[in-house]
Image (cartoon, rainbow, N blue to C red):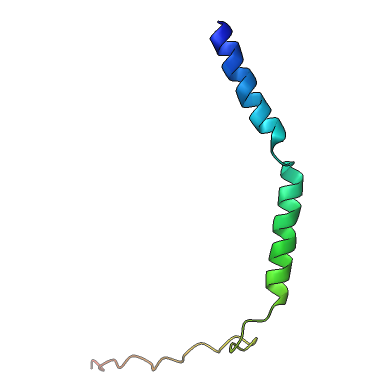
Length: 62
């Protein structure tokens, strides 16, 4: 039982030493914001219109 408690204590110290999850999430959002503000080079911001299709040819039945 002592070994179990020592193992659990070692895990809890690892998680306590890690950074706060909210801080990591805020950094992630800031990174996304910076990436979104950068316009990709060579691409236009307007969406291209959809390609027009020709109507299907149907034979007439009398």
